[in-house]
Length: 259
Image 1 (tube, rainbow, N blue to C red):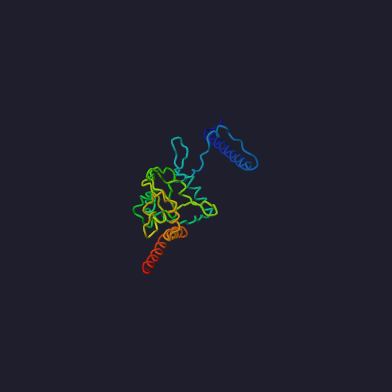
Image 2: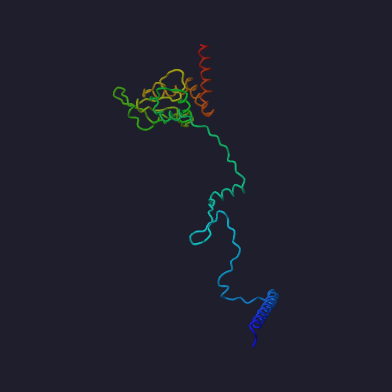
C-alpha cells in the first residue's frame, strides 16, 4: 500500500495531467472555430449575452414599458410643404394695380340727386358732371298733374311733346325734355344745368296750348345750343367738369365785356 505522501503526489500528477489535456482540447477547438460552426447550447442561448451599452440621443428617454421615445416636435406639414414650394418655385410678382379711391362726396351726392328737375335746388359742378354722364329720367308716364283749363277745354302734357318730326318725316326724340311730376311742368335739363340766363324751360313750362311752337323755338335758340355744347364737352372729356367750367366762364366773361 502507498503511503499518504505517495498518494498525495500521485493525485497531484493526475490533476496536472487533466489540466494539460483540457488546455490541449481548448487549443484544438479554437483552431477549428473558423472553419465550422460550434455547437450552441440552447440553454445558454436563451438569455442574450450582455453586450456593450448602446448610446442614445440626449432627447431619447424610456417610457414606462421600456420603449425608447424621442421628444421631437414634428414640423407642420403645411409649413414644411410651403417652404419646399417656395424653395422650388420663384416668387411671382402680382401686378400692381392702383385704383383711384372713390370720391365719398360724389358718391353721396349722386344718391341724393332727384330725377325731378324742379327739385334741383343747389346746382353745382358735381351735379352737372353727374347728369352729363348719366342722362336723367324723362319721367314719361302719368301726366295727370300737368292738366290745365283753357276755358272749358282741359289740356295736359302728352307723349307726342317728347318727339319732333323733321321735314323728311323722320321722328327724333327730345332727350333734353324732362317732366316734373311734382309741379306738372317740363324742363330743359341742359339749360337747367348750364344756361347762364333763365327762360321758360329753366323755371318750368306748362302752356300746353302753345307748347308745340315753344318747344320748336327753344331747341333752335342760342341759349339751348350753348347748353347742349357744354353738356357734350363734359361727355367727351369723361367728366372733366373743371376744364369745361373754366372754359364756359371765360366765354361768359367775353360775352359780357362785348356787350
